[in-house]
Image (tube, rainbow, N blue to C red; front, side, top):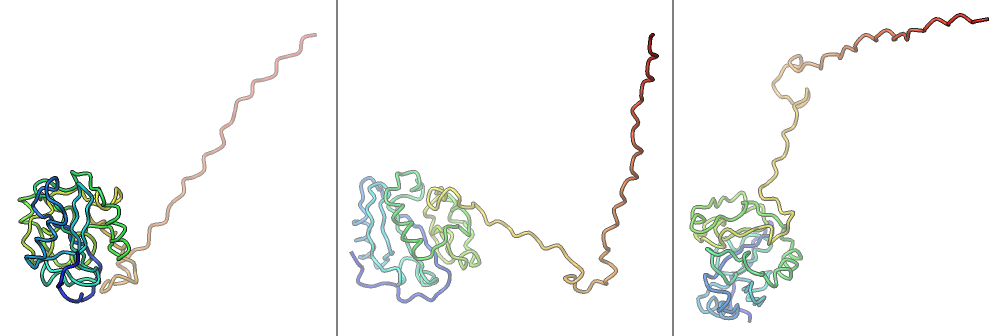
Length: 221
């Protein structure tokens, strides 16, 4: 069910994926129905997925930008927009998520790293006030619509990111340890300010312990 028009060429950068929600009931609304609405409104995404039935509809090839996110959706070697049939107030990770494995293998093939640089998306309506910083976005990986710069959306709500990208997904970025300054890497410091470690004084050896010897008893004749 390809769309007649897309968002144009991609501009390069780290591959990324945006997870969005249609604000419709996956038990009664099909992915095909949501896809038809997006085409009619000119707001197509790459995929529409119903996590209850497993139905997946592709509207735009991964090598082209989709249209729902606007200009920011052109950033990245791929910027795959996935519309999940569901509600932000009821995260899709509460469903069976039928078909997720196939989607994740497809995203892996396009080089989308299984990480969430902005952390787990906030639940709705708190997600309207999410941080949408460009530094996290530029790193690539997985994002909720509520975490994308310039996009005023609450979706996909407070999803369990480890149910999406796996149990080993880090919840937050692991900070790198700070390097220990050395004499060569301490600009502006006098050489004598970096003291060598004090010599370790070994304790004096203890005298050997003597075991008392009992005198031999006299022999009886």
